[in-house]
Image (cartoon, rainbow, N blue to C red; front, side, top):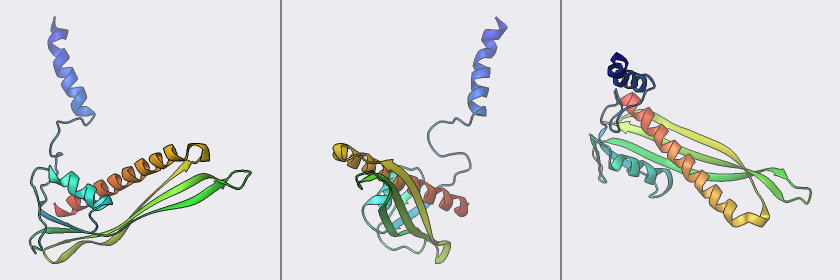
Length: 161
């Protein structure tokens, strides 16, 4: 009988020990306040806006405000490089490269000077399934852009504390 009474406590301790928490602000994470994101309206900048739009303690603004956190996406480029060729001389494997240049300013000073985040992944390619491979590559690029946006937010939040 005592074991049944202790079971819920054991489950809670187990979940807390593995780092699980309810959705919302992470422990130790500070609200960013007013945030302005400049750069292209697609790619990593759009994913940054999307992730901040529903965050608590964040107000996205479009106009210039010196008291706002300024995240500037200076470049967002995707490239492909052939890694392997088939016997017939056709591309058999590509390396997809996602490169994002950015900087972060707050109250006139640079929190993060211009920096580049780069992700690379390899994908096999087959001419007979070209359409499905293009969809796979597009999904990989979006995933890399989402990872870049998350990394920018983590670095910004860590410096803003």
